[in-house]
Length: 136
Ligand code: HEC
Image (cartoon, rainbow, N blue to C red; front, side, top):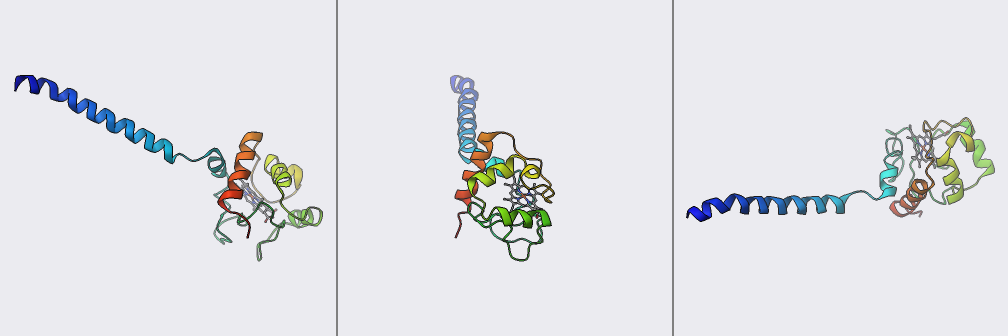
């Protein structure tokens, strides 16, 4: 019995250690992808599900390939409407340029976002948008 009493704290430590490692790997599996993490810069203003009057921006549902400034009922700025006359659809190239520096591509637009300079992060974000919310 003396032997066991000395050993059981060790056994408990091994068990708890195992639980800890198991918990850590679970957390890793559930961690967001780089694209999903980048989208966390957008979701305060944009939904992926469809128009949401509580959010500042239009929905980004099916945005890759969607027509520019085309959400029905959304009050786009004159700048964004003007841009739609030049650029019909948000292809990947236009999206990439817009996310890099929104004011450079569409001067005077009302999106309060500074841009993402990291090309890899933009690429991951656009891939995430395309897969999380494909066009109809
Ligand atoms: C602070 C709020 C805000 C944030 C953050 C924001 N946006 Fe926007 N976004 C807007 C608003 C407002 C508009 C409409 C701009 C206009 O009409 O001038 C817009 C417009 C857009 C459009 C054009 C949509 C269309 O229907 O043509 C795209 C694409 C877009 N945002 C992508 C993004 C992405 C991607 C991110 C994250 C990297 C992001 N936005 C972050 C507010 C935001």
